[in-house]
Length: 228
Length: 228
DNA sequence: AGGCTTATCGTCAGATCGACGACAACAGAC
DNA sequence: GTCTGTTGTCGTCGATCTGACGATAAGCCT
Image (tube, rainbow over all chains, first blue to last red; front, side, top):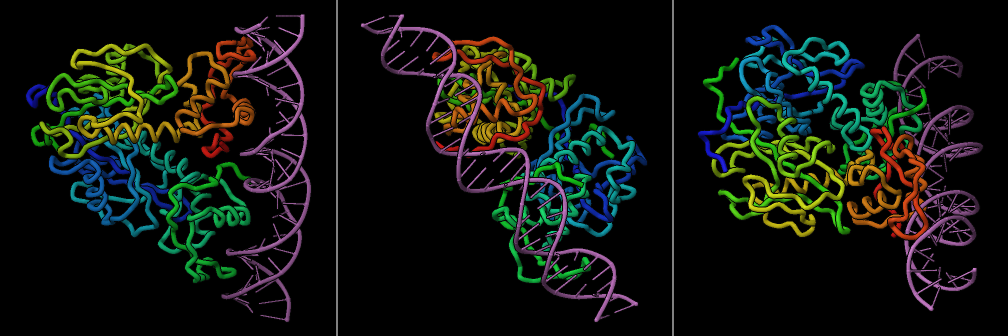
């Protein structure tokens, strides 16, 4: 059907949309490019897929290399393959979405001049088509909060209902009624597991601490509407 | 950062999961391979991305070449890039999902020995990792029926509520109450546009004909549970 | 102790859901 | 034409869920 000699030459890369919630804003992990093209511009972290590794494995590897973290939820976002998205050659890029709790400030990787968390509202002029990829990632994250337990990925291993609510409020850009949110979230089967512990770190009355449950879908879902 | 001379050699293909509802079953469009590897096996239609076209455009082109249809809803399903999924060389494949109304029997393309609609329940022993891709496509279709107007893509341009209901019943493998389904589906804003016409093609009392509306999400969604 | 903050439980009216009854509007049999 | 069978559409009812919001709990600070 085809042979190695007649296929068109492609390079395959992975790009990572790594999101976190910190200082009351949804932030993306960006690196400042140290090489041409787009030298000096902000870009999504990422890199080449190697011949011996799967594309998914390349995403995990790049995530670890760029942020030093592993074990995050990582899912395919989409594949971007316009002919001239890289000015040098034909590059097809597979984008991944990762959600992280508030991590320490990232260290710049080998081929980046800097790495930093940037509030998504303030992002501008990214390299390549990364603005579109980031936008798709943010939209995906917003949508998945409704019917998956993805919001808990933004929290530490143990968290309070209010911390989870603040994730929803910041990612969706709305404000949610604490009492109704508490009722719904504790009513979803398998979403939260009580640890029995409480914490006072948010001030006020001590709040119960929870861990992620094993639910993979939220039923009923948390709909994105709300009242003030 | 990189140059054409040192990137690893990849081939990029598209694979198409084309689904339709016909004769009371959810069917996938499959081709029988005429060339090695996997000669004689059923496989998803697909082919190489050309250097001058985008990956999305390649999917549209392959869909037209293999089925003769265009204008279908086409969305990215995922990218499959295990190192040895093709025994010959490193191939990364971008899978797309397309939903079609009941089409005429497809004609075999240039490099396929045959093409045919196969009920997804009866599919076995596909080439490459196509069984997994097909499974992902079916699952995606099932899930998207809940909260998008995708079910209407399985119907002709004008359809009755009962025809849409049968799509849901067949794709989900459940049976739905006709009265509640009618109430919910006509209550979703922007999902259906009445044509004013009626048809008698399903027997019984004439049913109102509808066209797709412009809604892109279903609110409220049609949840997958039901009672007998 | 009193005030402030946040957490959690409870209440209530309106919307929604599934189960199902009732009737409408056609075709075909006779 | 009437009967029967089939399918479409509207309505009703009780259970459940939702959003708005009151009330209380339980810590900290001064």
